[in-house]
Image (cartoon, rainbow, N blue to C red):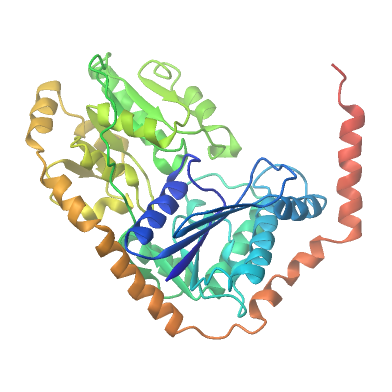
Length: 437
């Protein structure tokens, strides 16, 4: 089969979704399938669309076509926030490319993520069937993260809802999210194990490393940053030398849209950058080095759909403390290398072992967990399960007729001359009052 992965961001951009797309592409190619990565250039340069083509792999990066749509739709919106015009432009440019090229690339099925609702733009009877993947939608994250109540957020939530409605199939990678998405969408949600490729080469680990307790992942409220900070504060009372290192990009998901780093520093100034130490996101290879060098790995999520850190920590034989609201938790029931606890600061703090206990725990883990992961996440097992789903979605596909296109007609109400004039005037006024340096 030829699978098109339509994604707003792609590796080597840091993050779970770019890594997911890379893992999926590698697993598909390892089992004899072809992959087309369809993504966009976020530098907003006016250059030709880029095609990288190898034997079973093609990557198309939309530049000029994306920028054309972005420049058009940005005129009708206030800048900032979730930048709905970026997502509209990405969806429009991807659809144009697919209509012109899917036959030449022999694409059998299209996959795209739920976040941002790109699927509604790619749902078309003239195109191959579409599967929406449950990575974590804004509609789901809004239960835990701050979501701006502006037009941008409104549009993306609407795109997500329509994407779920019009997709030919919805797929989740944890039983927890399968159930959550079924409730969220009112539709059947399919399940398959997440694609993953374990590290082929062990990361370089310094012999002079300091003791590290770590979290890797975006600095988001949904990732449990406040729980982890409160647990760190409790632990610091018992052990003033305790340090927690959190590596991941900052976000505006704190209350009132604050930067999470500023919010945390204000909540616990006595431990910020002393016991709770944050650094910005790292390339994936460097993040793996952090995990491989760690003494103890935490996943304090209040909710997530999966979590590759759990697999990476287990692969390197690291003691892991994980909340029960972590999607990957189903893989670690009764695993001696992992403690699964409730998503509460007290539970996290109570689970932190003394040094002697940690040393014994680390020595007892062995290689059983690694062997289990190697078997469960073999490319053959991952793709056999996935191809069965692809074939089911293709075989059961029903005509959309004009439903998907009609559902997007509400955009016409927002792309009228009056809005264009209003936001052009605002932009002009801002330029006029901007102080000269």
